[in-house]
Length: 150
Image 1 (spheres, rainbow, N blue to C red):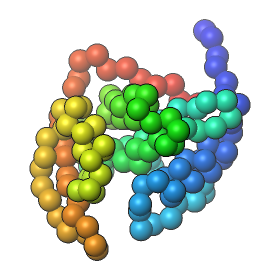
Image 2: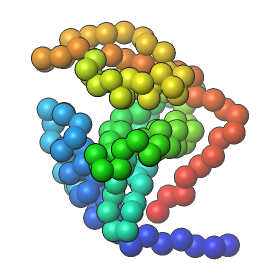
Image 3: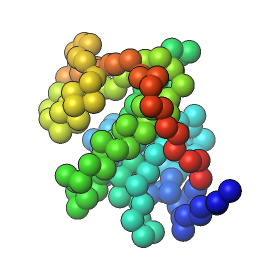
């Protein structure tokens, strides 16, 4: 069986993912590489050379529910289908029947992505200084493919 290796260590990938999420996702929480490595989240990354150019993750919250989050792509690499591919990987590699994501109401590209991936609007709630929309869907059991853990 073939083996595949990447040029980045887990710590280097976590450092770049944390920077990517901190710089572009407008979270109130700042993430560190150590926090990401210690979390229960599974991360899916797109690497170009020695640089993480996109990421998405998921965290199982209950036996039947997984949250898809941290979807982010460098501005120089947007409009190439990277966010869609990584989000699809997060969905098909979840172990629950349902997945959901929360999106800022003013984040039109992420809302469009959710809708094109068959997520449906569930609810709207106020968080600190903005509206957040929750979208959910059933994870399809057909055609499931697994990403390789590095």
